[in-house]
Image (cartoon, rainbow, N blue to C red):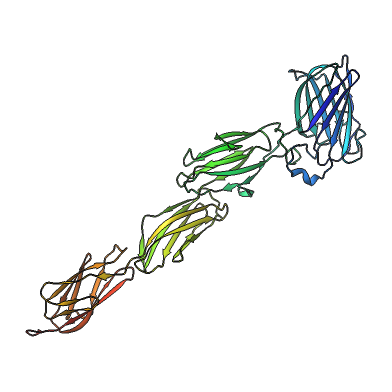
Length: 475
């Protein structure tokens, strides 16, 4: 903690401020004390110590904070609870080279002042510019501040501690899920039905653009708001792991912010989180399977829609399958795309396969289980012969007279369309299919031929037919 330690005895009042400043530079005029009122005042000596460091370390998190751009300080002392007119105020040059400061590293600056015993509000403000003639210039930027109420006794030991608070200026930068949100300020999470926590790291900056670090509170808290569109109740803000609803306040650099998303909602749902003037959009990635199944070329094909509302046009999608017989592909980019999955397994195959879809910018991943059923093969059951004949489709059908019939049931697993039929020589045998029932009828011309059954998936069953006229004559 940055401390200003004040010790008072019957002879003098000594104050010490310890600040974790990594670097400061520049010069300025010798400060002048502005004593507004000092009845029975005692001497005060403030010592400000700046630990050694480099300006490049300004972004490093530390328990302490003071901006590396600090070059001046103003101390104002008010009657407790009445911060209107100070009883004592002075501005001091803290830049390197100031007569108040040593030239060694770490540097130490000693500030003389006077204050009377009593209860006061001590206000310390740090600026990026050294004072001129004892006054901070109008263009000086205030970088950090703090107020402490303390009673100064005329005797004994007194201690006043200051913990400098950075003053956020401008929009913070955001880090989404451990990765920079970049200029897109856009992110996605998978709509997979599981509760997910999505961290957003917030870095605030002082008036000179240096990151405010450490555990001391901000001088002015950072407000956070969450708005949902296309649905509600699926996402809330969490601060330091506790759900706080759709509004939140970040009070220090160590506060942790996250979105808690329940993995639900419907395509088109999106959230916008505004943090101190900077916004990030989170659109879940939805993968919604289509109901229809197409049956083409011995393949079972599924399709699905992929949706990320408000995704930038450069958002692309990729897909992979856990099964070697399934080939997924995607088309389209931006807020919507389509997914097609084709199984090339042999006819009659039924399999369950997980297909994973991934976006390109936010790395949201959704895995969907699909059941693939490849139609076929076509098979024929044992035929029934009403007026003569014998055999099976596999061994061949034999007829001994014109008009004899063989009726058999066809099976085509996974296929729901129409099975068609044809005959190589209609004069020897004619064939027809009604639903899944096939009828082969002997013709009047003796000889051999084939009948064929086929579906639109490419499955084919061929039966050989033999017709021998054993009585009468063919006409």
